[in-house]
Length: 630
Image (cartoon, rainbow, N blue to C red; front, side, top):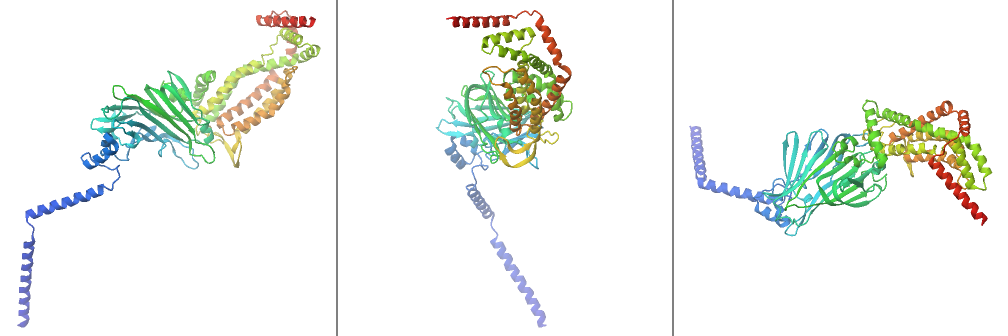
């Protein structure tokens, strides 16, 4: 009975405690007004916390124009352009536009290209492949100095542009605006077309008349620190140069060998050429006066292995009616003649094809012929061999004429030696009699020199041609892994001055070939050139050149394009064969001697030139005789 009472008491106690707890919960429940006040307090605390966090964020983070505190700070630093720093676009982000051949990344900060990748081509890199990047890692800039009406000097490369990416048909259009207000801005406009290395680029302004001082031009600086892309940095650097066009079609360049500066008026394009790739800025509105600068960054080939040159162009942008409006183009791509020439803007002048007749031969002979051979689908090494055969066939009549003239002179050598002895005390008479002998025999002593002179433009044009052939880049042939660079077969543990730290095989073969060719022909040339009194003995000089020329070629071509060395090896090898055939099967000196003797018996009419020369010599002889009588 006592146990039951305990149970009932427990139950009663539980009920009482529960009731008290329920009453306390009800009594402490906030009213609607209290809940509203609490929510307001939490909102205020949240805003205070966010404001505290905003103070620790860098100026490049997203803010809004409604943030009056941020506006005041930005305007205090940047004036009217402080508006741009408060927009959501004021971040270090990039926008990419891309087609099948070119990828470009443009940064909000500065509004310029911070990455330009040429698709489908690789840098030279041992054991790995990296795409050719003209621009990366802050090696380039495009900066306009803004002189504001409140006496500030601002640089666009430090300010934030607002990007907008759209399309026009198949074209990608990226517009970036550096804003001083909702309708006041400096604008860059990039238009990338399908399968094009060339893009449209425009700079214009709107509503900045009261913000920027428009009484004088703005200074645009275009700068590029060129990366190494090829196997031989010395060879690449030799052809990395700044080229520009000015005054309606004239073109010029800064020296590639040393630090250089220049200036030109009415400039239509500026090119930062990197041997086999190039960056070009073109304009429809001529730049009035541009200052150029090129700094050579390769002092030591073993240490300076990343960059080749640092280029810059200082360009004035002029206002018209208080606004900028420049329609331009940018090109990032191969320095290839066929591509540059198709734009019909004289961009082919960027290619170092040689001046005068040398450039003409390359443009209208070698480039079309090599293009035709390459289109056959054969390897480029075979293509060079076929080009060499073509050149030798074209020059073979000249070679034949030269050798024939030398043979005639060899036949006449005994008679000329006899005249030299007979009139050794009378140089004028000796010259007269020698000229008569040549005339009677029907021999022109200059005939042996003229063919050699006719070959010089072709040989000189080829020296310009091979460094400019983009198609040879990274094309292999036999042991050469890149016909546009040297064909190293052994890396030396040391560097030989003027030679390098490697051994290239094609230059060795070319040097051997030219040695045997000169050995075969120099004796004939010496025999055909009688020694003249008071003149150096050409025979001895030629014998020395037999050894000097191959050594010079060995040193000169060791770091040059292996395609060029291959050409000279095949050329001299073929020349040896041609000379062997001419000497042994075509030119018969006995027949030549008989023909000369027959010519002597014939009455030969003097040409006007020969008559004039004879009369001049006779007058000189008469004057000399008259002086002796006195």
